[in-house]
Length: 128
Image 1 (cartoon, rainbow, N blue to C red):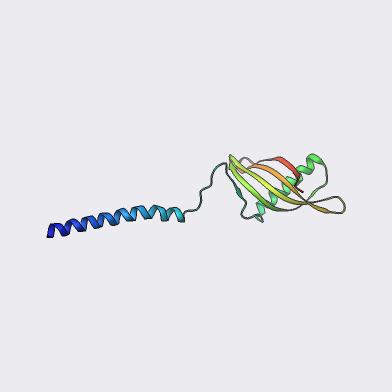
Image 2 (image 1 turned 60 degrees about the vertical axis):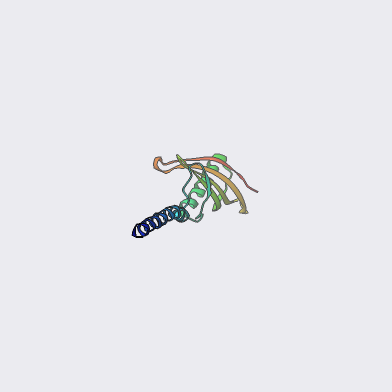
């Protein structure tokens, strides 16, 4: 009888270990934040972040330098970012134009590599 009790105890302990091993990875996966996928676009969470706003202002300034159309930066309204060897940004920017200061929305694509201090305006066009 003692041998049967020991066998049952060992079997119960083994079953408990197996059950814990199968539940623990699933619980850990639920709690872990989503990994950053290189090449995947994701919304910019904090669009009012000073760096994002400065990047939008730079995009408008660079566009004005190239097009000489007198746009004035107001703010970045929304955007998406993509991790590459640096960052790609798709920004929706509010800007004003002309003496009347008519407000309009523009889309800007910007590439930035902070560690080399590289920035490129890839595209800039009216969004509305």
